[in-house]
Each structure stands twice: as structure tokens, then as C-alpha cells.
Length: 288
Ligand code: SAM
Image 1 (cartoon, rainbow, N blue to C red):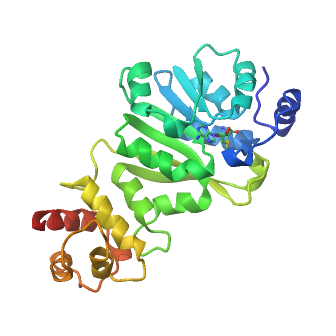
Image 2 (cartoon, rainbow, N blue to C red):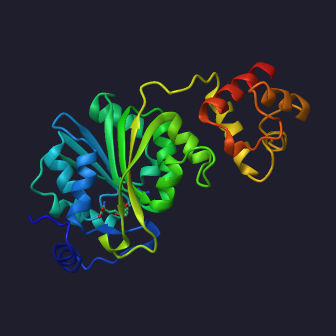
Image 3 (spheres, protein in one colour):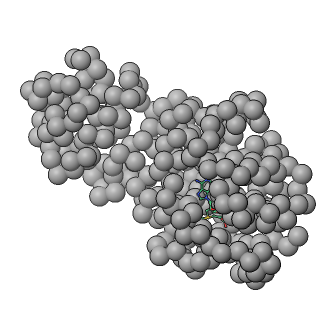
């Protein structure tokens, strides 16, 4: 079977199977070998690894993954792609094609069953509509993961990597940076895909921390504090927190908690670091 990561082979497969792209599944297939090499090299996959690929499409990246990894499980939602994958990946005996919606799967159970609960690597050219939910699910459900190397919208990659004070900084930046070290490894223009998406993309590698970089007594509370701070971006942090339905403290007490961080009670949430959000949530926890 020829490698698929170019327009000629991709079109040949699509025509052979009379495949129609489904917009609702975010189908933009990669047709550039340089980009594929970049993803694979940055995913640091070795012959010991179990790789979960989300949305294999026609199997373009899956071919590369199968050649490097010990075992690959590829989860694809579109039933019309399953016979295509069975054909394009027929030469590999280390692939398992799973027809399912990744958002409905118990990924921790999959890892227990298929990899004895040992950490896996995740690689994907993600459908844009599931980027944030799938990343949060992978982190929050404590699936054992070593790293996630994914193609996402450029704007989303920038948000994951953003630091305080930047316009891109927000709840997603803090959530990602609590669990992993993000690094954008490539910017990818629309012409590397078929069909072309409207926006630019980027490959980002999220290298999971063994232990989070900050100490948090109650993760759920910290994320409530973070969400409340960014929900009302143009308000002060004190107003954001006291308007939140999740944090049951009156405004004066909230102002005191903020001041004990050593910052003004009139500060905006977007200026606080992850460490400050962790400390603030620990202080709030001690008052409720
Ligand atoms: N990996 C292929 C490539 O790079 O050419 C395809 C990438 S395309 C951006 C996204 C793929 O994810 C499509 O094949 C799409 O059908 C699949 N997909 C979309 N939603 C999904 C879901 N909820 N669960 C599993 N796969 C999904």
C-alpha cells in the first residue's frame, strides 16, 4: 500500500471508495509529508509505545504511527471510513481500528484493557469541534498519558501556550498548563489539508507532568475559581468571583482572600499566574 500523505494517493483512495467529506465531523485530511514527519518526530514514539490516535480519517498518519509504535488504537466516528482504513492499514498487524465516538468512550478503561494501565501517547489531527472537550477529558479523567501531540487550530494552540497578560490567556491556558508543558512545534497552513480549512493550524505537544507544578488542595475548586475569573473578563477578579454561583463567600471575604496574595483587590483575573490561582483557591478553601 502506498503512503497516503500526498494529494495524488489521497484523491485515488477517496475516488475508489466514492467518499464524501462530512463537515460535521471536521474532516480535513493531511496531504503533506513534511507536516506528518513533524508530528511523528515530535511525538517521540518508540517501539515500546502504545499510541491512541483520535480520528484516523483514511489512515494517513496511522501508517506512520504503525511503523514506529508497538501498538496503535485508532478511534474513528465515521462508519464510511472504516472499510477504507481496513484497506489502507491492511499491511500492519499492530493496528486496532475502533469505530466509535471518542467523546463517548471510557478512555481510562481502554488503556487498562489494551495497555495494562501503563501510560500511552496520544497523536491526532483533531477535528476542531472536539479539541477542548477531548483534551480536558484526557487530563481530568486521569487517563495515564505520557504526551499528547496534536494538530489544532492555530488560535487554540496559542491559547494553550499563553501566559498572563497576553490576550490569549484564559481558562484553557491554565487548565492545560496545570497538567502539561505545552510547546507549539509547527505552524501548518490550510493548503496542507484536503479540503482546505478556513483557518491556520498548529501542531502542539503537551508533555504531561508527573505531578502538577503547583500545590492545590481542591482541583475542582481551583478550576471553579479560574472559570469564574475569566467568565467576566472585563470585571475585577473580586466581582467575577462574587458573581459566580460556585463560590459561596461574600464579596468582602473574597477581597480579603485576594489581598492575602499580595495583590490589589481590584486586580483582574487575567493577570494572575497559575501559582497565584492555586494559592488563591487554597486560601478560599480554608474559608469555606
Ligand atoms: N487523521 C486524519 C488526517 O490527518 O488526515 C484525519 C483528520 S480529520 C481533521 C479528523 C478525523 O476525526 C476525521 O476522520 C473525523 O471523521 C474524525 N472524528 C470526528 N469526530 C470524531 C469523534 N467524536 N470521535 C472519533 N473520531 C472523530
